[in-house]
Length: 124
Image 1 (spheres, helix red, strand yellow):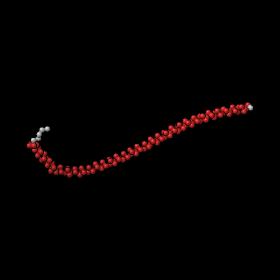
Image 2 (cartoon, helix red, strand yellow):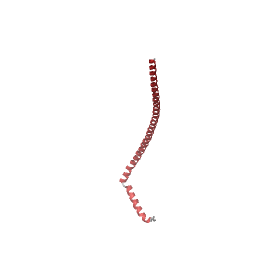
Image 3 (tube, rainbow, N blue to C red):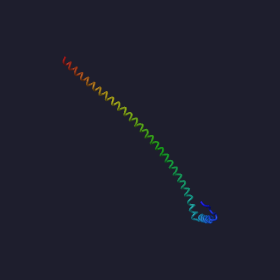
Image 4 (cartoon, one colour):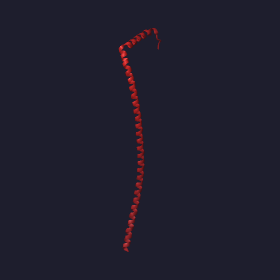
């Protein structure tokens, strides 16, 4: 960057200052500023309220999410327990069926023995 010559910049700064002063002294500008300040204050207040509501909603969302996750975890644990119970019951069922089959076979053998004994008794 080159050096600035203050003698060349001074007239430009005077023109800018004059323009700014004219603008500030302008009644429409003053009215606009007078209207803008309360609007800016109200806007700032509304933004604060919205941020507070947003934070509250975020907190409620996180709380609901935590509850949902806890419920899902509890249901999964119950499902796992139910599955374990179901597996145990299936094992018991299989064992009972084996025992019933053995008992049925023994019953058939006993009936056969009874028939043979009845035949022998009838022959005698």
